Length: 135
Image 1 (tube, rainbow, N blue to C red):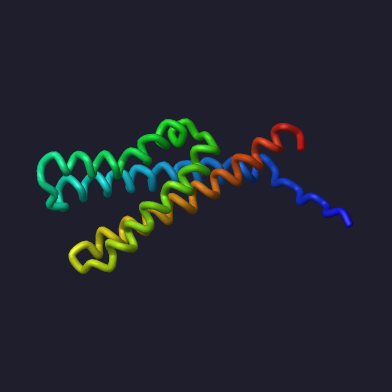
Image 2 (tube, rainbow, N blue to C red):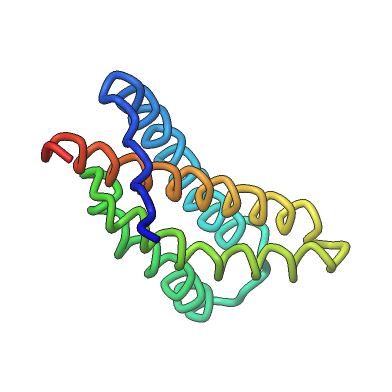
């Protein structure tokens, strides 16, 4: 028994959703980056050179994704869904520490927002490209 393919949405339906999900994913990406940078520089009491090592380890995965996210590549958004899980785990673990609870919850919520918006952008972008190709 052959399965009938589900019809793709129209381009008019996909275009505003693509724009909105891309803007939301970029906003959550920059907010997550800013939160990591701000917390590490101002609130985390890390001495000297160790501060820069920790900051580099935290920001390197996001900085590797930044060019693709800024250019709107669907594959970069898909990879962001994988990478952002590390920050979600870090946020949940930090939320259990009373001195870092607010930071932990913010980190978890921003990473969840980035995950959801990047996932939606990836889905809609591939549908949009398939529709443009005449499928």
